[in-house]
Image (cartoon, rainbow, N blue to C red):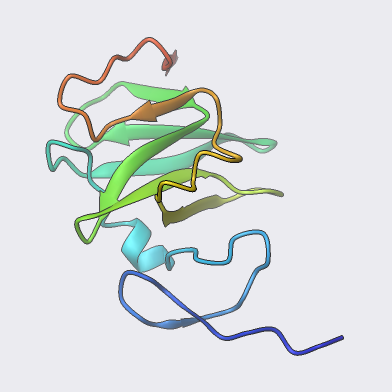
Length: 122
């Protein structure tokens, strides 16, 4: 098997293990700095053992589940979603990112983002 290319976190530059499924994933430390379009810190998680994506805005008690969320890490647009086989993954959002984007993605980067794609977690 050929050697995999090097990978570095696009947020802080720390060396990461290359994963072909997520070639430009952010490190966990950078993922913990994610904010919405209004600068509020976002906490992300799997909603159950089978995966699924959930998030909560810091300071709020309500949590939501959806296909993923558009947010910012180091002032850079990112797509954060559940990873294949569990966990959470964040990758840079680009104009090419629409392929493979969950169809129920919440765009938190828009100040007046509609919450109709969100499902409250009870």
